[in-house]
Structure formats: structure tokens, C-alpha cells
Image (cartoon, rainbow, N blue to C red; front, side):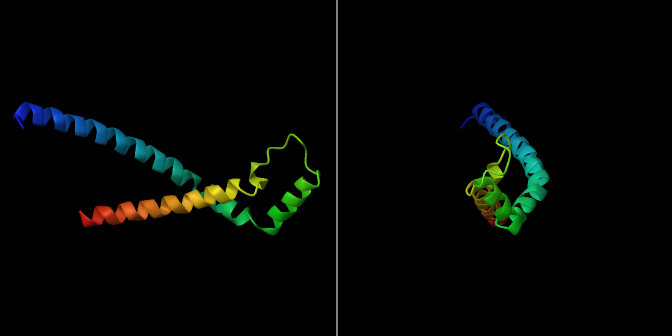
Length: 100
């Protein structure tokens, strides 16, 4: 590869990698800020409080206009599952970096 072509190619790599690192850094900041929310949801989901809230919703005791995604049986479970899968991916990525 000629020098000019090599430099152009490396500039492309630099631009792509720089953008990805900045985006990932911002996403990690958002994720870190949400960890307390994930912990709270994990404690709530399946608790006696959640079961009561779910039962009251099923019985029509809660306001109709109340946002209630947290009472669905899938929304929180799917989020917590995705969170665990993300943790696994991050560990694998960290292990991959150690091998290089």
C-alpha cells in the first residue's frame, strides 16, 4: 500500500473509532446513571408490593389513565434480562481486551 493510501485509510479508522468511543462513553454515562433505577425495579418486581399493585390493577382499582408498564409481567423482566445480557457482553469485551 502506498503511503498516501495508507494515511487516508488510517484517517478513516481514526474517524470511525473516535466516533464509536465517544458514543459508547455517552451511553455508559447514561447506563451508569440508570443503575439505581435498575436496582429499584429488580427489588420491586415480584415483591409483595408488586403483587398487590398487580392484583389491584387486575381488579380495576387503579386509575384508568395511570401508566402501568411496570405492572406488565414482561416489561420489567425483559429489561432485567437485557441488563444481565449486557453485563455478560461487557465482561466478554473486557476479557477480549486483556487477551490483546
